[in-house]
Length: 243
Image (cartoon, rainbow, N blue to C red):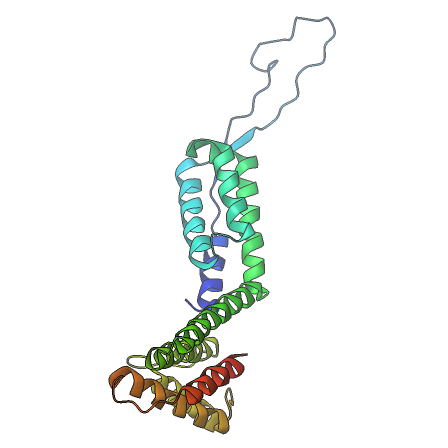
């Protein structure tokens, strides 16, 4: 899911508001129930008690907000942990509609929405993806050290493919058909020709070369002429490119 789509989803939920369940006004003296327990005690003033939201509306809002939060934020994020803690501490679902509880729940959702709009989640996602790419490259390093040159090349190519896809998605570039290093490089090249240089022409040439090495290793593992030093440079080059 793209960040813009997530923001639109959160905004749609934020615009919803369950109705309050209002209890009727009451006045003891008007109802013929004077306070007689103490002399000269002032009459109870009228008040309107609004203690709950309409249950089905409140529950539907919480379900929608829960889906949005957990589709966008990782389970380890503070807003998700706080959200779950409030729901758990409130007890059974019927208690979630109590105004003070529901308003607290909604405040957590609004905090998440603000973070999403401020780009903090985008930066978090970027970090997670960068870590994933680095983990793949570390696996490639280990395979190469063990003499598994073809396998190391394929894994390094997978890290490159993942990073290129992220670049395309992050810059809202349209993708058609199945993804591959060649497809992603072509989309980025088209963007560069249109004036949006995400990767340079020199970087495109390196990507094409790495993609060729990856394809050779994947489709002809026993015949691919891959020197260990070339693959080492490929891994380091991808690491620097992604950084």
